[in-house]
Image (cartoon, rainbow, N blue to C red; front, side, top):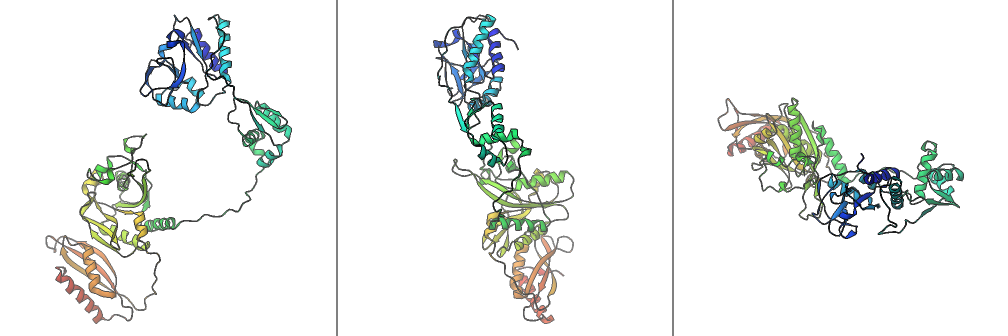
Length: 543
């Protein structure tokens, strides 16, 4: 839009030459001198659009002896703008560092025709040409009288850049068959001069540095479709996997074999997720890495635990009216480093969870056992856990291998499930990847197929509510001795015919001897020993 002759001339020259300029009211320039400097931290100025701008030390400004009068390369200041009563002006034409202009423009939230040109990089030799053209237009329009001479803080001309041109090398490099005359013609059409195998690069082509850049320009005009394909001559070798990568692949197969579907969730989560899973205020998981430029509050921190992400997906499935969902993720969590100058520790965690399809605690326990078996984990035991706020205190167990805790599984606390809008029971497990990897036996041991048949017996027991099935299994294994090959729970019952405060747990036992076929007397002796031992601990046979 037209403003006045002086401002219109600077805009016209910018469009004609591509070189932004600015005009200052000389009477508003304190000290009669302008300089380019970095702004002071918190320094303020009003730009021509009437907005107050707060500057910092990374921004360049054009200033007089007292104050900034323009944001360099972006916009001038109100305190030196051309007015109707302006009698003397100063034209400024400069070549500012492109990244600096872009950063200033972005921080101020101010993108102008000037900044759009400067941030792409300009020909430094245009500055004086633009000044001369502006002065010429002043004279042509009778808009003022020109004072002889220019003031230049850096009058050094940009050195002429030359690059040697090797016709044979470019043909070899591009695998083409172009004549030297064709190459010369292409480069000269691009504004370059070619003499005696030396290419003189124009100042506006700051991207041309070496012979590879010349080859790129020639390839564009020669036509990529005219370049002959050349097969790669070196041997191509297939890569391999590390032992941990192989373990992760096997783990994924084991999880899918157990009926779980893989999900992939974002590592960015909401700070509210810790409250939703019931973590206390002093929990170490609340020490997080915060995102400087989050998309929103829901993605403002890096997760330190995978469970909230799993529950979010289960909640989404539940709200979509899916009758059941069985999911897993090998997720990455980010543990904040005490040293603020270092990146967080990235750790992988196996997290899986489900709801619906009549799944219960023993379904979850079976999945955990099948995965541990598939991964050849060392001898494991499950110990009841009642102090994890995210899980049900009476239906949760920690996993131990060789006396070391390697994970936790159980029913999600009803209040936590309610926080995620999931009705009914929800079950989940969390196992750190590196801990599980370390707990894996180096080699699998194989046994020959048994020579003698197995015998199955069912055992229904009555025990107190607080007695865990893990404790009973451990006792049965000790009482049965080496003939017990396998033990599985197939029923848990509370209700009629079972006293208040008690429950019934039914086990399927598989018995087999390595050296003979078990007779009825042998089986009877084993079962009598199991029942008698359990009765001493207050666990009786259901009748």
